[in-house]
Length: 109
Image (cartoon, rainbow, N blue to C red):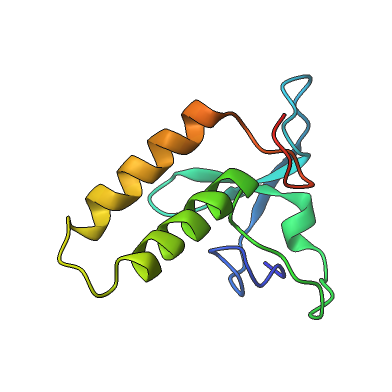
């Protein structure tokens, strides 16, 4: 594995076959031997050399908006005794879903 953000980065596996899924938007993958006779599908792109200066995130845009909203809520109420952070995050995430989804540019769609 050559993709530094992949959870199996740095490991090597014996390739069983190359797998191409028709439809469904699945990436071209390698089926590899794993532990105890199990196999895994590893996207071909995860086995290619990557540019270390490329910034890649595992957060979706929606998750990032939720994270920002929770941080702002915590900042606004830092000096007040209030509900636990988990309750605050759940309430903000629910209200964000009711308001609509934000587009890539930050506007509501």
